[in-house]
Amino acid sequence: MAGNAQESIVEEDGSILAHAEEMVRAIKQGDEEQVKSMLEYISLAREGGLYNEVGKMARQLHDAMDTFCQETRIDELAEDAIPDARTRLRHVITLTQSSADRSLTAVENTLPKCDSLSGRIDELGKSWQNFKKREMSVEQFRELSASLETFFVEAEKETGDIRAGLNEIMMAQDFQDLTGQIITRVIELVEEVEGNLVDLVRLTGERLVNPYEKKEKTEKSGVEAEGPQVPGAASKTAVSGQDEVDDLLSSLGF
Amino acid sequence: MNKEMKILIVDDFSTMRRIIKNLLRDLGYTNTQEADDGLTALPILQGGGFDFLVTDWNMPGMQGIDLLKAVRADGNLASLPVLMVTAEQKREQIVEAAEAGVNGYIVKPFTAQTLKEKIDKIFERIEAGS
Image: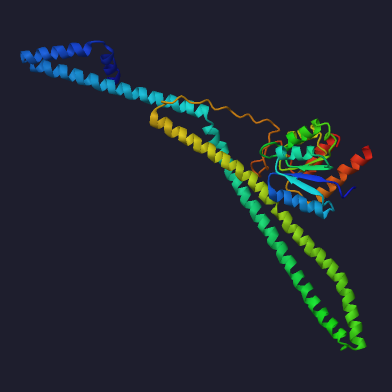
């Protein structure tokens, strides 16, 4: 290979100097052939040095990239963490959507009950006013008395339903805690990716001028808090719901 | 069961604290106080007067599991009933909480019915044991 030949030329100490001296001598003597030959030798040697330098840079960059990949968890980020974050964010959409649906359904079911209650209160109020003004026959009074009795029973049931609807809306807000935890984790991931990108830019821009701080690998212990489990990204040891929690606890004597 | 008992609700998300507070009120427990993590909860508990602790696990500052351990290690609080209400649902975590002396464990999202059942069960056991 030409490259190898050139490298060996450069590595020979003094060989360029010797050839330069020979060239000067040849110029003085007017030996055109010898001048050309020496010039060619020297320029080849110069190119060889350049190739050699480029080769060294490529090796250093390669080594630096290797170290970078080992010391950051860039592979893991690309292969696991980013897809995992996508799954988590999709789960946030699912949770917020289901919460909005639950709340709206509860409102839709509750509002007509309020309307019907207030309608009947209005009706009974009018009859009551008639009664007070003594504009009421005995027959009408019997009717009023009967509808009041029905109203008391129904009103109790319906205010119970309204209460249940309001409770349902309240419980639907539980998404905020769960999505908050999930999004906080994704923000942490984005920060890590950002840090790695800055490192990468510095690495390719400065060719490893700065020594790398060894990043501590965070080993996750089994009991470390990790927030809500997300469908599709759930831990293998996660239970699937309250029933399994109860079973597990009862197996422990609870 | 004593509806007047004083309950501390610990969760870093105010929405969840409000939900738990409202559910407890619905069950007849109106004497509640709130804290947003273990670090703020512990001095409140040490101030005395609490009969029941409801805590999340995953919180900044001091986590719920560490709050539970701190409670059990404190002579004055050691027997305080503790209910964990958390999104943490790995088996080893539940076992850890059980070993640390938790009285009940609810995974989020949960229902009002579950909360009622667990609270009833905790105090039935305590009354049976005493």
